[in-house]
Image 1 (tube, rainbow, N blue to C red):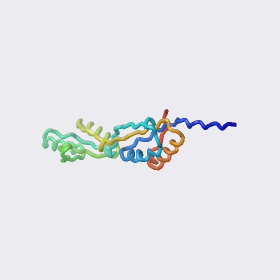
Image 2 (image 1 turned 45 degrees about the vertical axis):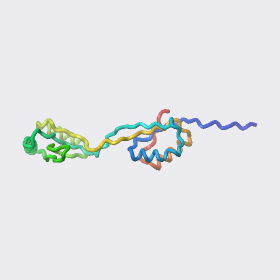
Image 3 (image 1 turned 180 degrees about the vertical axis):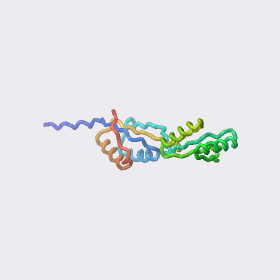
Image 4 (image 1 turned 120 degrees about the vertical axis):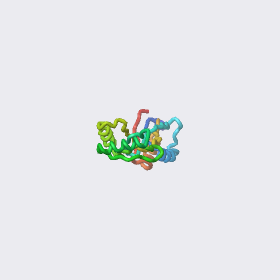
Length: 166
């Protein structure tokens, strides 16, 4: 009886790993050489994603003159809306009306102020836009899958691998 050679493992697995910020992406890429991937097995998709501080700022844009802004500040206070004039360069003369941890709170204040007749009140999320990436691993064999799963558990236990269609 002749021994039949074992058929090679068919690469079939597909996984997504992410979304990863710049620091995590560098860490993950440092561990990838052990997987012995071919170039076509890894696809990196960059996504611009806003990661704010989680704070929402309610403000009234600066008026033409400081005197007009001071008059507006007094009118807002008379209606029960605490505020202060911002002095930093980027928002100089803007009236700050509050900083909220939840978007709903900021939206509620904007609605109240608009209902009181101050229609130019605005809101914005504080924070910077950060780049983030999604890694897609295609046509992985069983050994690569095992190594990828071990790497994920070690480097990003809170960011799971997700199966995808090959």
